[in-house]
Image 1 (spheres, helix red, strand yellow):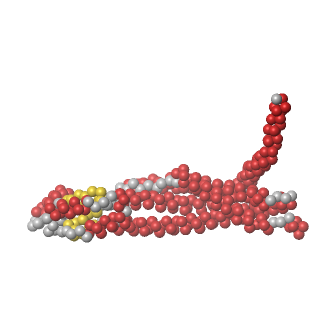
Image 2 (cartoon, one colour; image 1 turned 90 degrees about the vertical axis):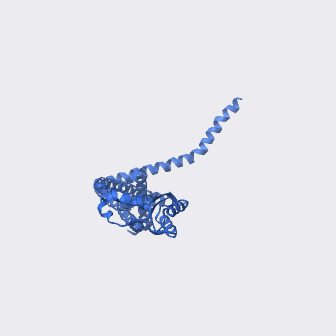
Image 3 (cartoon, helix red, strand yellow; image 1 turned 180 degrees about the vertical axis):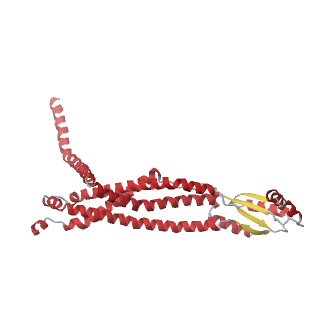
Length: 334
């Protein structure tokens, strides 16, 4: 019994000794990452002017496409709201009797793409026109009612798009007794076409500015590599791996990206604050609910993460290009 109890602690200590090298290696790896990350940001803060200039350049380059994407999103929301209120007006032939007009309205209402149908008979239309126009005396000179029966058609939610409404218009135009169908979707189609062009232009601009950010970070990291050339040579002489030597510069690129993303978010918030009031007043004059929408928490996180990835990628390109040119043999050659 005593022998068994004494062997169990020894076996547990042996198991801990067997596991400890891997654990020590992991702790050493994570500790080195923390040290390199802290050292990288401390080096950046030692040159605040140069770092601030790089952050500002990145912030402007990232804020411009982000602001345009927010504007595009706001325009798409407004156009979707206008599409949802689209209503089709069908003017019937003058000689069509009231009974046939009612039958036609019932036929249109049975279509699955139609939400509701309202028939405005010609006598009711003339009475409404008298009440709203104030031209009673002029209308009295007319020998007969010049207004036709009118059918007001409201599409279903699934059909409240430019293509859906156009298909419904084609269906109504083919019905007997329909003289003309009117729906003001031409301007909406032009707006959607311009929105598509703007979306392509914005993504192209975002791609170009993303490449510019990568080049800016790459050039900044290249200068940092040249300034630490002797330190890199010593690290390689004592057996430092490429990953070991590359790590501080990758963290530098990520920190530059983080600062650039925060500057971009700040610029966007300032622009929204500066333009929000005038845009709301202008929309109010047109009785519109249009308003610029901010990036929100998800958008801000996406912006910052994208900026850090671009910074890391720019640093990786610079490190991949320039670290291979620095070899320990350069000391002997010098």
